[in-house]
Amino acid sequence: EIVLTQSPATLSLSPGERATLSCRASQSVRSHLAWYQQRPGQAPRLLIYAASNRATGIPARFSGSGSGTDFTLTISSLEPEDFAFYYCQQRADWPLTFGGGTKVDIK
Amino acid sequence: EVQLVESGGGLVKPGGSLRLSCAASGFTFSDYDMNWVRQAPGKGLEWVSSITTGSNYIYYADSVKGRFTISRDNAKNSLYLQMNSLRAEDTALYYCARISSLTSNSYGSGAYDYWGQGTLVTVSS
Image 1 (tube, rainbow over the protein chains, first blue to last red):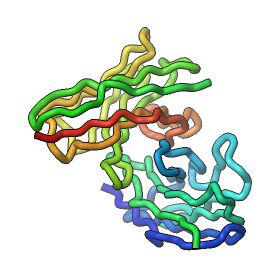
Image 2 (cartoon, chains in turn orange, blue; image 1 turned 120 degrees about the vertical axis):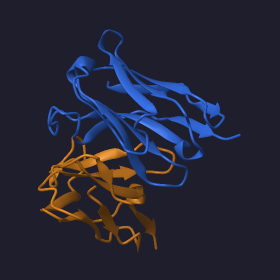
Image 3 (cartoon, rainbow over the protein chains, first blue to last red; image 1 turned 135 degrees about the horizontal axis):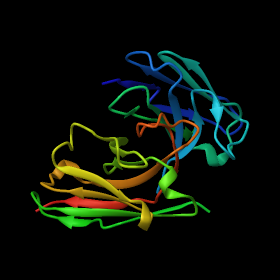
Image 4 (cartoon, chains in turn brown, red; image 1 turned 90 degrees about the vertical axis):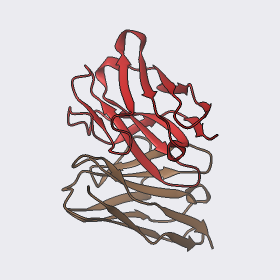
């Protein structure tokens, strides 16, 4: 099983600041990695697919990078609605797995 | 507008059974691989099962293999999850999720571009 480790567990920042979230895979997933945002009480929302492609309707302040085992989600300037949980997910091999999540909260 | 609406959750005793349904609308259901993903209260996301468009390929997480059965009825635009021998650790919000055609590998995996709002399954005596 491919284990995805997200860091940090919690990121405390202020609106307007830059957020950098990490996802590390226990073995290569090539570019088969996605990022999701989940706000309290809501279903997850796809942000990034194939490591660096923004999903439909996702603002340009969200960007993804990386390949192999190390991936980054960057939010260039945090808006109030961006304070939420973020999960990475790989589809390179079965079972499909998610990272444990990073909570971005208001400092 | 794409919509996925889950139903069938509830309170069940350990060892009991439930059948979850997911009604799809706003897209050609038969063209998309579908998955079930769950989230235990206060926890992260866990993939449960995948099914391809024609039900040719089906996969399960080890934690549910032999107890859960995924199926679909393309004529009814519906996805199902039959859950037997339920355990306390199966307590979770169960989401149905559509695999994005941009990321599908035709074996049932990919990124999830649409999710339902979930149906809560509680296993407790």
